[in-house]
Length: 363
Image (cartoon, rainbow, N blue to C red; front, side, top):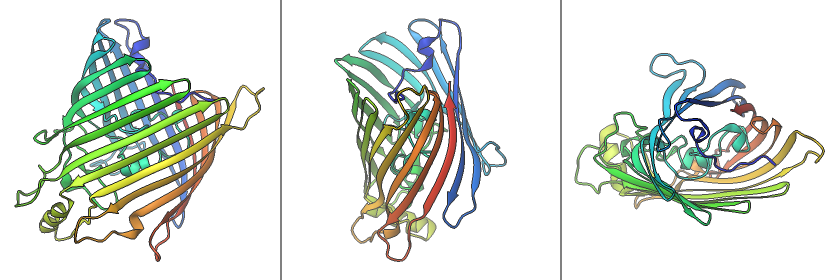
C-alpha cells in the first residue's frame, strides 16, 4: 500500500548550493446535490528548497488556487503557503523562522493529494481545523529518539472578528499577511512512530480579541486540541482524528460582534470534529499499480456547545459518510473517486450528497 507517512522537506535530499524543486497539483470534478457540476483546477503548488550549508536550510511553497486570479481574488487565490529558514543545531533541537504551517492534525502539514484518501480534504480538516492554516512564526523542532519527534512555534493570534457559526475559526486566520501579533499564540505537536503506527497530539492556544471594538467584555481566547493516529499493516490501513476547539468568552464575543454589525454570529463556545477511516488495497498482489478502497465517517459540529443565552443552529451540527477508491498508477500519482452524504440535526434542512472525481500528483 502507498506509504502515507510524513516526509522530511525535499531540501534535505538536495546538495549544498543546488536548489531543490518540487510541487503538487489537483484537479477536481464535483457534483453537489441541487448545484451544477463544477470542474476546477483546485490548486497548483510549486515548492523551492535550498541548502545554504549543512546547518542552514530554506523551504517554501507558492500556491495558486482555481487556475485564474482576477480582481481581489474573486476567481482564485495566490499565496505563500510556507517560507522558512531552518538552523540545524542538534538532532534534538533546531530552530525555524518564517511562514510555517500550524502543526495541528494530520492534513494541515501534509496536503499532497497522494497522501490522503478522498478527492477533497476531510470535512474535519476543512471546517474544524481550517486547512490550510499558516502564519508567520518562530520555533523549534527535533527528533527526541525512540520514535518521538516534536515541533513547537510562537505565532500571532487569531482575529475573532472573523469567526462565524458555520465556518468556526477559519475567518480568523491571519496567514502571515501583516499579522497583528499583539495577542500571541503557541502551537506544538508531539509525534510517535513505530512499526507502521504514527500517533500524535497537537495544540494551538492564544488570544484573539485585537480585531474587536474595545468594550467591557471578556477578551476572547482560542484553544485547539487534537489527537490523531495512522496505522498500516499489509494491505490494510486505519486512520482517525479527534479535534476540539474552545472559544473563551464566546458569549461576550457574539454580543460585541452584534454591536458592530447589527447581527449576532451565534459563535459556539466549543467546536468538535472527529473521524475514523478504514482503507484496504483491493488490487491483486501481482499488479504493479494499486487500487485502494476506503470508507470514512466524520463528525464536524461547529455548534457543539453554546454560550449561555444562545441556542445551536442544528443545520450546522453535521456528520458525513464518505466512500470511495483511489487508483495509483505510480505512488506519486492518484486518480480519485468518492461519494459523500452529509447529515445534520435539523428536521427541516437535509444535508447534501456529493459525487467527486479528481486527479492529483506530486514530485
